[in-house]
Length: 140
Image 1 (cartoon, one colour):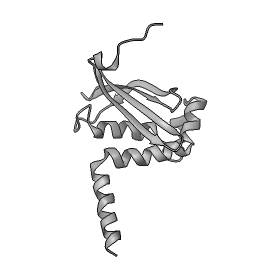
Image 2 (tube, rainbow, N blue to C red):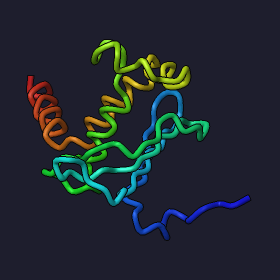
Image 3 (cartoon, rainbow, N blue to C red):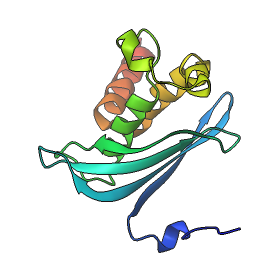
Image 4 (tube, rainbow, N blue to C red):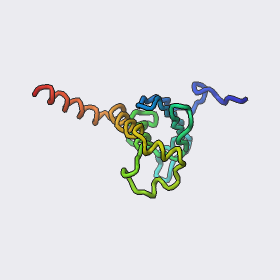
């Protein structure tokens, strides 16, 4: 069986991120697709795997903000915000093309947990605000 190019030899490989949730360890991998969108933003290729190794989401359609490096925490956090959207977070039509496995994930506690964990881990401003609130709370 062909195994493909190892990650460390793939020159377009950017990040491999592991995220723990109550249901297990999820994995996000990103690559530079070598393409840009009509506004000049770099398009990332990605795979998001569940704890069994099943690819929940894969695509080459995520345009990074030009304000952040394509391999930055902010880019990873922004992508994870889309991948962990849940019904009620956005329009119903967003989920129309979801597979049963994707819908099961979106409705799970893991999706909500990962959304919050990703925001804390990859959004510096959010993390600093949480820390300020914790310090205020401890002073009481």
